[in-house]
Length: 487
Image (cartoon, rainbow, N blue to C red; front, side, top):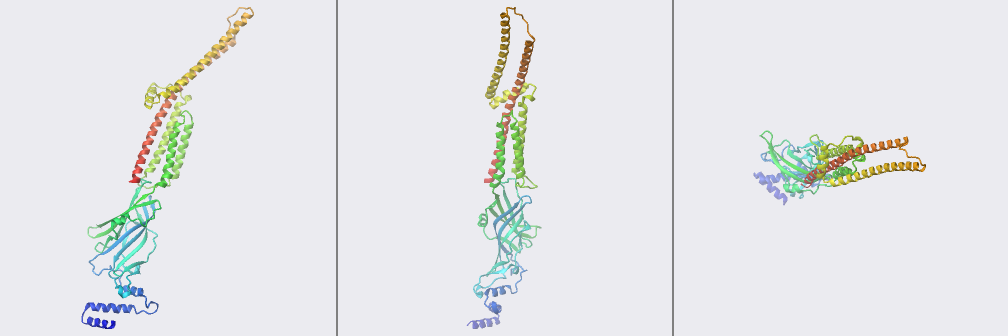
């Protein structure tokens, strides 16, 4: 029956029917390709591969009418963020790239090949569009996928993973709360839009929210992928098509918060606590010098962790420098206060304008008059009690010596003579010297007391100014980082 139909079609073909000739030609072609013997005698895929390869020209764009452009559909899914090199401005990602197009020369009837609707073919044997990524700066270690899928209607599917090493303008000012936006631009390097056009396989909304294959356990978190189509011209003559994907990623700041910010905050808190040490002792200076050395060692350790670029400095680096400057200011203030409160180095009286500004105005402003008055009254009472005891002792000794002389004269019946032995002269001279020394020391103590009072008031004033500056600085940075983190 099949032979009768074939001879009928052959006779019609000889009469000039084009459709009948096509049927006869395809029948004999399939028969010829299927006439293999041996181990490929019944291999349908072999017959289909030989059928598709017969007379195929992979160097020619696969369209029958050259006026129609080849539409290439592409898709992108980010699998992992491998490396972000801030110094060299390079982003390394691992993506799943998919592209498909219609090859009009790779079409067959599934009924002629045991209902085979698709077949895998070597990529080197078919035409492949020259679509590249404009931002490529290095060849990544991508696995070689040597095959493409071809469907019976001519649709070619080229799916492959790619390690993409691309240039990206990285903004590290907000480190470690930074968000980076890197673009991957796909376009045909040679063909204009009249030959090759580009479109998306999926809708832009699906591409934007798709995170199904992303491995999100690393330092970076994928926020979304934005896609945008654009046609451009270099010389206002030939236009090219491009599809740009914006990969938006955000750094996870927990590691840097624990290892960079918290130690710095702890050291600054200890610097504030150091102001509660007595300013007239040398322990505060030693304590603040130790803090300054510790912070210097901390900066040396974290210097390799901070990103470095030639075009900018992250805000956290400015934060560390300002903290170091605050520690230096705190140490300078402590040295000045210690210089004021040590009496052995002070010989002149406190100027009246200093007393007026510091002891009157500043104490009222800082609300510390009562505390300073109580401490000074206690010191004055101790000094007065000490002087009174010394004078009573001198008087008592002089009265006792006079009484003994009178008793000694009356006892022997001799007249009392008003004579002063040389020993008494020496004693009175020594007592006078002691009194002069006490008066001089009292004057020095008064000067030291005034300078000590000035030092305490200035210490409180500078501490509160220092605390306000640090609080304002911390609140400003905390607000900025919170806005960047949750924006």
